[in-house]
Image (cartoon, rainbow, N blue to C red; front, side, top):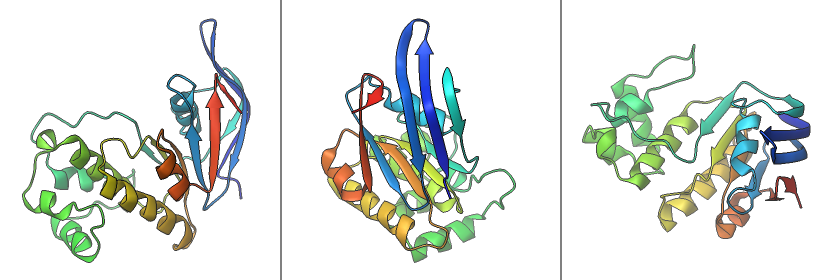
Length: 208
């Protein structure tokens, strides 16, 4: 069953072509990586696949069950804590209590979130790497999800946590029932080859 299907998708801003006749199908369990220089259209393609932008031309048949992480997401500047953010769920799904979140972290904490949670750390006080790990943990907990779409998810992570994330992606797409797919971008070839089942190179708005 195809989770995401783009057929002859193009995207223009005024007279500038960002994407040109892109076709792509993603199946359950696939980990599809987009690579290419800055400005080649990776983020635009991810947003179209996530349903956040509409193509100028072509068709996009998409799942609504998306786990989206943008390349840059500023943490809330109020008093919201790590536990508050981790408890967020898609509409209609039960919100876990603090005790339930702590139990989850006791069982499995590969991204090393437990200490931040226990200290009731404010999101505004997190480092870039800590904030990215919290984002990743929250979206991975909000299962089942058909398709994770992440824009440069390894950004701000140190080498150890990049390796951990790559292993988690492989685990989630091969060792769970109804495995999700991943569509993500990166500039890190080591990270891509570590976890991708398919690497697609974008250049000037089309695959090469």
